Each structure stands twice: as C-alpha cells, then as structure tokens.
Image (cartoon, rainbow, N blue to C red):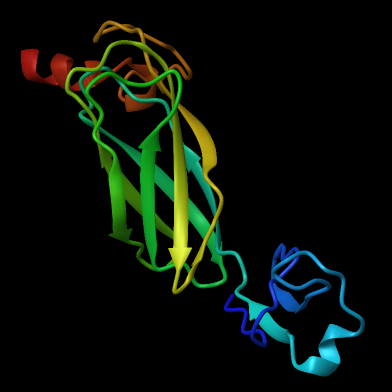
Length: 178
C-alpha cells in the first residue's frame, strides 16, 4: 500500500489483513501533535489489498532411495502462479530449497528433488504460493521417509502383484530376479 499524505503528516497505524478496501488516516503530525480532522486536509487514502493465494495439497510417504517426493494439489484459489518449498524443522540434510517455480494449473503434481538416498525419518517443509503481488503464508507439511527394506511384504491385500503390497520397490526387485 502506498500512503500519500500532505506535507508534515505521518501515518499512525496501517494494518492490512486479507482482501478488502482499507482507509488509512493520520491523527498526528510528524512531531506527534494530535491534529483535528486530518481527512479534511487530504491526509487519507483508500486502497484495495490483494486476495491471498492458497493451495490444497497432500504429500505421500516415500522410500529412502526415491530421490524426490511429489506434492499432489487438487485446488488453488486467487490465481497463484509460482510456488516455493523450503526446509523446516526437523530439516532433511542436503535438501536445497525450491524457489519461485512456475505453478501449473490445478489439479497437478509438483516433483521436489531430495538427496538420494535419504535417511529414514519425518522431516518438516513449508510451501508458499504467490500470485502477482500477493503471497500466501508458509503452509507447513511433513514428509516421511520410510524405514523399510526392499522386499518386505506389507500384505495390504492377498495379491502379490500389487506394488503397494511391497515396501520400496520390492516387486521390481522380485521381477528382475525372475
């Protein structure tokens, strides 16, 4: 927001929270002297704050040797055009932040590169989306790197050919042995 005031006036308190039209008024001069009716002296301005962009997303657990994780997003609001992913606590060692990358239209999937292999554990991250002139807050999420050995039968169903029944690529290892 740009505040334009008459000579010798200072803005008192201006706080923009969310979209809407706001009016900033002054109540004292630069020396702190309270002045009567400053709006009649042209020391006020209205401005419209831009709407905060947002994203609805999920992140699935990954295997230690994945080398990347995916952020699946189903919806956005207020026209975000870029995204950034940063490490939070606990941080994944060796992770490089992703900064101001183009955000394809929803629904979509973002591939985020991580060290390969990664140590098993749960790590913190944030995602921020931006539109022209506006930014979301940092939205926290966690990523779990599984502590599994390839070839471990998880047995979610009785079908051995279903990849989700095997931990971290075990079906591929089995098929390569045939």
